Length: 604
Image (cartoon, rainbow, N blue to C red; front, side, top):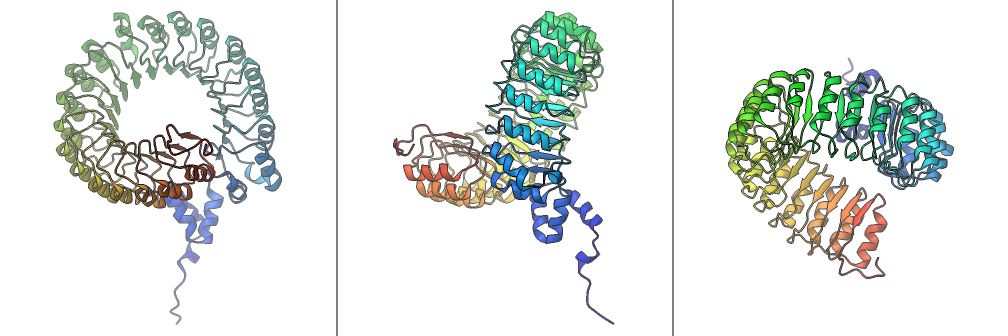
């Protein structure tokens, strides 16, 4: 009888391998999977639906390998241009990779003009969503190219400053099935373009006209959109109560309204809007309304389905919290940042009725104490996000209650909370699902507190230690050992960090955003030790790191090819190193180069 064992891969069918592959959520896990063997790589190729291209030079090869894509993201390829598209369509069989493509992200693709867009749209017949936000050269001709997407349902054109009513007219005539449209910061769009939009695109469900010169006439036209569910008008200084009254009897399906930073809106206009839409789910009036009238408070009693309200910067009272608590039982988010009149009693009343709250923003609510945080922790057991920046009366007792009762907590902002100390972080570390923790300006924490966090919060993705002067190399060693998934880290003005700490950070291989401003004890050797291992860095701030010399910058130029933003102001870099750095970092989109005393005119 043969004793030869059967290879494990031979008993795994393609169907089983596909099911295993679908369970891999993290990019790092998928990368390891496809490197194991050719069969695993093939399965990844036929199942991958989303592709984010980091280097344009690999685009041709990637599209040959991945032919079943639904989403293609080229937003981090600033070098893509019309010639790239021509080459792509001629060398790669676009009938393969383009046939299923539905979502195309071209944000910040400044080199792509009319010709390239026209070719791309012609090849991708099934496109349903396109993002061309922040494309500096995108104007009316490029909008005309996009209008060829007859089946387009979603279009984002944020800050496309060259688009006027002419370009918008081309789009609304050619893309009559649009359901979602963002025109944020498109300053050349006027009432004429929006009026035509409201007549032609009757399927619109989402419209963003933030920072445009929106007037009452605009809102009269927008009110005719019978299927509109979500309207954003952030920073529209000409929007007033009269305009909101037009919406009172229009947009019957409206569920979300954002009038934040609309200076001319008062509580009476918002009251009229609520009267016509008592089924509203989300209201954002942050920094728009200074105080609330009795009529507004009375109207809020009708908002039984409300799940989010943002009233940042307003004057509030315990009466408002009592009304919300008694009537808005479905509330899951409330924003009270910089509100005056927020008291412990008000918060206690709020959470006694709104036990389903998941997001609470109490930034700069300076009267809040441990009593309010304890009430939140006791009542809101499903809390996910809590912002307590500059709540100086919060102490370790609050963190103890959060650690005991809020096991699901994912995000906590304790910036500038003087009462936070190592003992508090020990208690907080029971929140093992924390993803984001902000401790900037918490001067009473040390490496000991960081050790507690690193030991128990292994899922942490973002950590802010800005000006935490008690943090040093030992804390970073603990962090690099316990928080392997860390992506964003701010160590600016943590003066005790040295090259030893930089070496420890090198073990955080998923790190993408790192701020090291004014760390005067790190040198070129420390920077080299960091970047040799951290290949995913996309943002790096080295401002005022005066002891880092060219040896560090040479290593940066060689290993950090994925950098998109860098700050080298007041550094000791020389002409030669700067030339090498700028030449090698082909994905760089933004560089701050202020006061480089060792760089000459020739170097620039």
